[in-house]
Image (tube, rainbow, N blue to C red):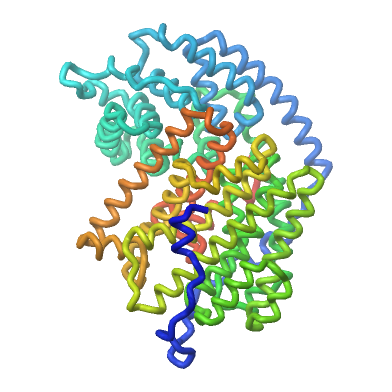
Length: 560
């Protein structure tokens, strides 16, 4: 832990500024769980599932042959790879995709000057997303003598869309890509408002959810639907994508069946009615970026840990007294079930349940030789409760007003990204080492970027919530820099873009840590983008868009 954070999160004695008599418990009337026993009746036909697996394997080999056949075609190869990724099936062909991209890179100096904007942009994005650096000078041929992008490009909507997507892979100092982003957004916004344009809906979707920042399971369902309606779609690839989606969906539904039953058995909704009962929404959020079947253990562990952490957050956020919260923070510092005896009755079961989750996780990892990594997760949890406690003191002892930097530093810990990436790392076999976890705990630039993206997206997701808040990153920024709420939000949005560039730099410098480490951080940043999409916060108030997404991912299978 850095000395800066350690000094801020120390457990200082509580002052007399607040007495129990003066304190009124803050109770938020969060909407109740909307799912009930909806996922309790997960009936999977094993015979049907086995038949589907057999068909998926057969089609997978046909798709592999199609992919390999494109390797000799510099035009079709990147298009096919992009289609695999958008449909959510590229994970079956990681080695073949990497080989193909290396081939594209080796030949990039000979790319034809007549290559289209679409093809140049697509190759550029794919290479950078996979950690292969290519200079943005490849776009110079699309600029005029003044250095501006040529106005003739405006009518090439597919090319403009590809350039827009590519520009999200920019790093610091790449003015060409900054200019490309502004140029494409300006003109694509107009296309999105033209209902008669054949690409209007596609453009509108992309403007809201750029691939690099949002790529997740919900997008796969969207692109499968779009690919089906494309007259030039490949019949085998479409059938494979739909079957694979349904097969993976059956895995997710089975996990959700067990998770919701486990959660209901704990009865926290009745014991702690002032907290957020959101197991289904949390599972959705963590499944969106980690959808592949091999991440099953990660999805279950991270859903359990964050479900109880959400309740703990609600208690620190207002319900608990300072004295109760100090006891709870000290209990997590000691990490001993016997500490429950010193806690108020309403906290005892929650505390022991949270410790049980980590104990079960440690036992599960014994067989893999990675149980020693759980200590890093415990330390991440302790940091979170310290930051919760610091925030609670600031909110209750109103005469102590933190600076923007003090509040933001603390809040980047309380967003719990440290816990999430620690859990992710120990379940990714290639990177599950103490060295990786220790590297992350030192908060190098890409890890800081992931923390900060998550916190800033949380803070600006609901401006009205910020107005009502006593303390927030937005209100601290407004006060310290004497700006309006809108000005503060605009500046914080610029910071999100800045930290995404930090992450992009890490993608292109994979020698520091293995690429799977960077991929994990990128996925977590995408988790925050999905979580707070368009100002939604499905953990507090479940919007209709979130309900629709959950039904799409875990409801009926795609029709074959």
